[in-house]
Amino acid sequence: KGPYISGRVATAHKTKYDVLIPGEIISLPISGVMRSKNLHPVVGDFVVILNQDPTSRMIVSILDRRTCLSRGGAGESTGEQILAANIDTAFIVTDPGMDFNISRIERYLLIVRSSGAEPVIILNKTDTCDDTTSKINEIHTELGHIPVVAISALQNTGLDQLKEYLKPGKTIIFLGSSGVGKSTLMNALSGFNLQQTESIREDDGKGRHTTTVRHLIVLPSKCSLIDTPGLREIRIWTAEDQVEELFQDIIRIARGCRFSDCSHQQEPGCAVRQAIDNGELLESRLERYRKILKEMSFEREKAEIGL
Ligand code: GDP
Ligand code: ZN
Image 1 (cartoon, rainbow, N blue to C red):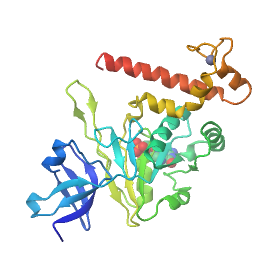
Image 2: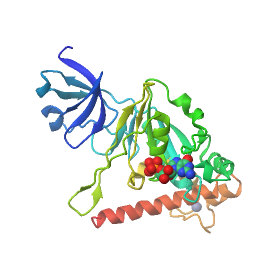
Image 3: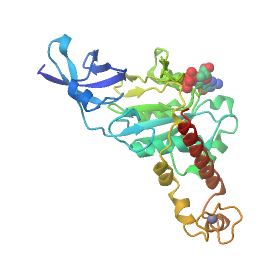
Image 4: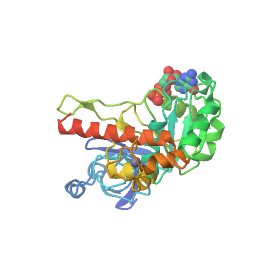
């Protein structure tokens, strides 16, 4: 055991990090240099530990992030925007029932794709849904060819299809709204009852409750899973360039509109309407684009009034 060893961050707390090293989990601070440079590890990070006597061990650097999941999409290397690092696959868990929402899935996809990880959409609770196939078709029609896996975590059906992602050395993050069955699925996959995800509620001084803590666990098969405590992270993305990236087809088409402020409704010479008419663009996609623009301006307004 030389002066330096490496480990992986299993949980990032405010000032301490639970780090997995062979055979144990240790709680470590980061070095003063890292603090001054504002370099904060996130769950999934591989870190270098200065391995002096146990009382003065600390994290001294973060190894390059292979993939970087962040709220805004693009992976800037510092700041609280980063949700997790070194993710291979993101399971976007969703419920095919009442709450099924293509726009929400699309937003998760945006975040996952710009992270470098591979998205897999998981339709859970298929035991309660009798038109799973139409939901799968809807996903493929609206969002293109993404792997979709239909399961019931509760009844343990369809889980075999997830095996190919649960390989040794791989890291999987579970995304999705609260209540879709992420914990149930993680428990089913790990074969034992994991601790109930703890989410720490903190008051940020403005009366807002924020903060959730993610945990990385390593399965006996050496595949790692990262949970996502119930949260509203998907609402918090605002980066407009990400939207532009996602909807670049519409933006490109709209350059052909006669009026530069065209709303693509009834205007003469609207290239977007024309693209819809000749089947180049889905009306539903334009609607989602509108909706996101609207939400973004709403988020901006809220930010401006300090909400
Ligand atoms: P999470 O918030 O995403 O972690 O969701 P949970 O795993 O806590 O599940 C929320 C609720 O959905 C619980 O009552 C689960 O028992 C239920 N649930 C989870 N998976 C399934 C499923 O496949 N079928 C049905 N019918 N219920 C499920
Ligand atoms: Zn137009």
